[in-house]
Image 1 (tube, rainbow, N blue to C red):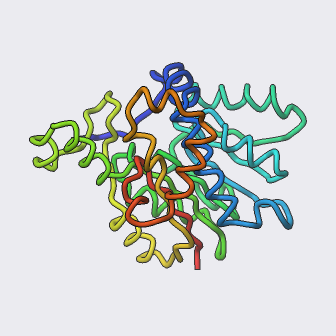
Image 2: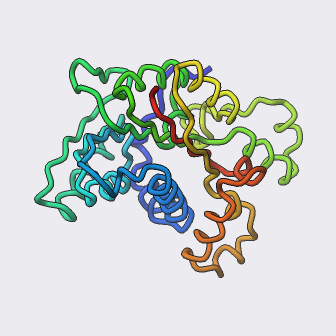
Length: 258
């Protein structure tokens, strides 16, 4: 039983090296970014938006949005990641004012922060003890007509990965919850359950995409041989097409508050 949300203070350096600084991290960032630009044209046209990146990690997505001229509030449960985000902005965009907050999503409120045109919640939902309750609270920070960018770890892809690796007992047990302190998410989620939540809360699904629908299933030598740009091209070709999108290591949903 998991009793607390995962804080990655203990793995910040490892994340910077093995995830954010790796090809798989580069592919993930590129796919999500392109999907956002394709689905939300207001990101590159019109007035600047007020955007919250809740669980900002090391700030790469926030940096891209700030470069487009948007107003950013960045938050994370990890104080070390918030510090690194501040350092990133100081180095790359020293003249841009961004607000960086350290603390849990559950303590953020519209009364204190106001509401946002767009809220990002990427690779966080699967690491919280109460994913549905946490997401429902976060959505109160989105103004009517505003948008949500939600990326989460795909439970069905995790089952399939165990199946093709021969870990049939684990796959069949349906006990996929990671242990506290480990790197398997606490609460991997399915597309159907999360889409059901969004419909329940009166959000309109604008677009869905699988993230790394090909890359994670490729032979390691083949992954290393292919240029990242070519991988991203083929990923984007299939990311939004069933049944391939359901195979993504992560699922990326973009939805609008009605």
